[in-house]
Length: 155
Image 1: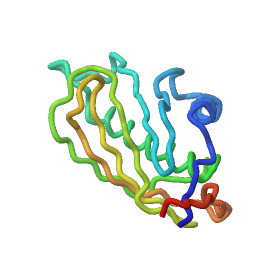
Image 2 (image 1 turned 60 degrees about the vertical axis):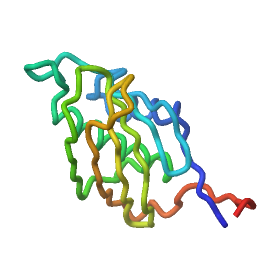
Image 3 (image 1 turned 45 degrees about the vertical axis):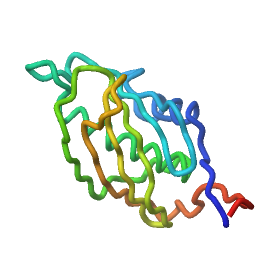
């Protein structure tokens, strides 16, 4: 069986996010781990993310979901900055307390033209999910090299 390995590391993704998207506040997002078809992204809690009542806002959680899914696409395909969201659905599961939010993005399908994935969001120090998102990214025609293939002899 052939497994795909990520093309970019956590540090490379963090550097890319900082250099390619100067409007994103420095340190807002931090890629913590990269695995085949999966990344873990932390979104630092900012005061502007907090709604009355002390909860993280829905738009902030949606932003984390979209960013985490984008970053797992980049991790697997390389720096394909032209990849764009073509569909995203989010379900808010419970009220999130105002802490850093963690997005665990997993690709479910990766082809030459699109990537489908899901993001499970929780707040720091609490394993219970606060939101679940599913989305699709459209990939440009030149994104033909998908990850680095490796033989998996354990199959």
